[in-house]
Each structure stands twice: as C-alpha cells, then as structure tokens.
Image (cartoon, rainbow, N blue to C red; front, side, top):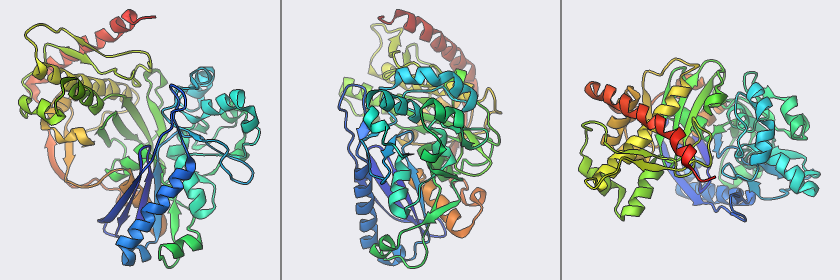
Length: 483
C-alpha cells in the first residue's frame, strides 16, 4: 500500500493506493488563507500539519488493515511558498504563498540573472523574491532564518525529521540551476542565502527518508515506511496522468488553466513567460504555460448572468459550428503566459444588440481556448509539438469546450476514464517508486482513455483567423488601460 499527500492551497488531500494503483480511500481537510493586506496571501504552516494528522487519522480509521500495509508515501504541494525556520526548526512567520504579490519590486531586480540561470522570469509568486522582501521589511526575522522549506517539505520534516526536497518543486524557488538540477550559489547569494539554508535535493521518485516510529505506530503501520521526493503540484499531476515521457502532456481546465509538456532536455523560454522546470522523474524537464482565468472565466460569467455554468453551456450543444462574432479576452486577473502582465484586464469585443447570453458564453469558452493556444505556441517554440494532450479539471466535462479547444490547438484531446488522476495520485505513484525501487516511467503510465476528441478539420482555419484577431487585441487593450 502507498499514500499520496497533496498540500494544496484550500485543502490537504491524501489517497490510499494499492500495488495495482487502485485508489482504496481518500480523505481531505480544508485549509484557510490569510490576507492581512491587499495583494498578500499567507498560511500558517502548522495548519498543514494539523490537516495532515487529521486526514491520515481518518484513513487509518476507515482502512486500518490497508494502512498497516503502507510501504511508501509521496508528497505533492502548492509551489513557491516560503516557510522560514529558525535554528530549532521553529516557524518564524506565516508562509508567504504562491499567489502573494508583495515582492514585485524584488522580483524585477533579480529577473535578468534568473532568466540566465533558471530559465524563468522572476515573478512575485516565486520564492526567492519573497526572501529579499523579508530581508528588507522584516530584518529581525531574516537574521534568524536557518532553513527555507517549501510547503510539502515542511510536512516532510515533521513526518521524517529530514530536510529534503525534489527537483520539480525546487525549480520554482528560482534558487535552482534548472539545466544542472542543482542549487545555484549565484541566485542564493542574490537573496542573502547560501546552500546551508537549503534542503538536500532528490529526484521525485527517490527515497528521502523514513517515517518516524511514533507516527507509524499512530497509524498502525508495520515495517519501514519510505518517503519519496515527491513533486510540485503540476509535476505530480503529470505523474498522475502519465505525462512523463518526452512529448507527452496535459491540459488542465480548472479555475486557472495549465498547458504542460514534458521534455527530455531543458529548454527555457522566459520571453514567453513559460515556466521551465525540472520534472518529478529523473532526466526530464517540463514546460508549462499558465492561463490565470480558465474555468474561472465561465464561473465569472455565471455570477454576472445568475445562471449555473452547465445551464449556460448546454444551449451550445456538443459541437461548435464556427467562431463567435464576439471575442473575449479572459484577463480577469491579469495574465501569466505569454504576457506576464498583472495589470491587464479582460474585455468583450464586437458586442451588438443581437447578442445574448449564448453568444457571450461561446465567446468566453473560445477566449479561454485562445489563451491555451497562446500557451502552446510559446511552449513549443523550443520543443516539438505534442501529438495529443490529456484533459483534466472540471472544464473537461464539457464536450463542446473540448472540441473547441482541440480545433483551436489543432491537436487531439484525450479524455480519461473516470478516476482521480490528480497530484495526490501522482504523489502516491512516486511513493510506490521510492518504496519498491520501481521504474517511474513504467509506474506513471497514462490512464485508460475514454475518448479522443479530434480537431474539426473544416473549422481549423476559421479558428486560426479568429485567434489572430484575438492576439491583435492584447496590445490595443493594454494601450487603452488606465495609467
């Protein structure tokens, strides 16, 4: 038996998986985010541990026999969070989260060396700029920092006593030389830190330590329980959907959207605001584009029109007939890829009196599809285009939306059979690999596919033309934004 634990932003989830990769049970616990000032986002690290204990206690109660047989645990987590510990491993302040924007000035200061060393633009959400902010604004706390850990790695510390991290999560700190899969002394020095304050690095499928005896006893586990390096949330999701071989990938249509493509070598594209990170399996990297408002755009329209998202989409049927005469720019919270623009905002373009909510809904779905096209275009500049993408997330339940996306991308979209293929499942797979010395490329196989949605050939050219117009609108809207 194997456990996967995912420390998310709004909840912590654990799944219990057998040797045949069947999920036998799952539990989750809610987490709260604190916003002490506009643009700030923090979390109490102790809340992760409280949630972890509650979730695993629950699984031990639900499945005592299976929990007793656990041999490996994998961890996944929200990336970029700065968890600061003193010399006694006590938390010095609340963790500054991935969606905290206070360190924009500090990010700009280190972006040039970051692009050269890590292959990534320095963004306020990443870890390194946060430490510069703490050094300037909370110097008494910075002076006490002995160790900086990412959220999942703080939970690891309490589970095992080890200070360790994996390559994929560490790549999001901006302290990792991404091509070399090693800490960068130059990037650490820019933030006033050194290697002694960093955890030891491991591949995501490698063992990093063993569960403490008292915790193993608490959950009825017998024998040695190994912890795997694990992965950042998207890399772990890649392991969950089997996107570990070069050229494989997935598209996540959640509140935000992700296009994720695996590569056998490092290929950065900071000019396109691409995240170029190490993968959670050895010898692989991944490129990732992020659309900040994917299903979130439909949720926004749902709130404005006071109608459920499913009721808005249903009148469109299952197959698009061609692009809408309206264009929608889904920049409701700014945009990450390819613009890296926190100030840009969304817009409808081309409205007239004949348009109604059906037309607006179609435009929103197409606008999100166009934002995915923007992501894919900059991802594949240094890489060969994937042959298909696996769809995950709530938005993947809409056949109309998937057919639109497939046609806009001119790429088949594979829909898995029903099941949990998220980060916790990917973490459990990595836990299996660490415990059994198993090959992650065999264990992290793609799921059974229910359906492959092909592009509509007769509409590819029309959607390409609509996307070109959509692309022309960004600089025009940016120019018109209030200064």
